[in-house]
Image (cartoon, rainbow, N blue to C red; front, side, top):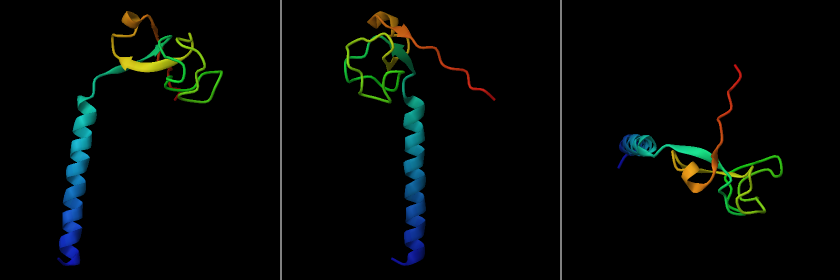
Length: 88
């Protein structure tokens, strides 16, 4: 194989990989932040008490949240966390 053939093969491979990644992201189910359902050490991100994921110390802490399938939060006994508005 010469350099040109390798470059073309790499470009085609990259496009195929990019296309499949975009398709799988579009097919992913909708999720929402749900407070009060995370087990200790299983939260998805930061609160006022710690800096990020996996650092909660208690089960089902009121301010600890995790992503759950959309519409399942209240069924699990949690409370949906409202999305913050972005300032422009």
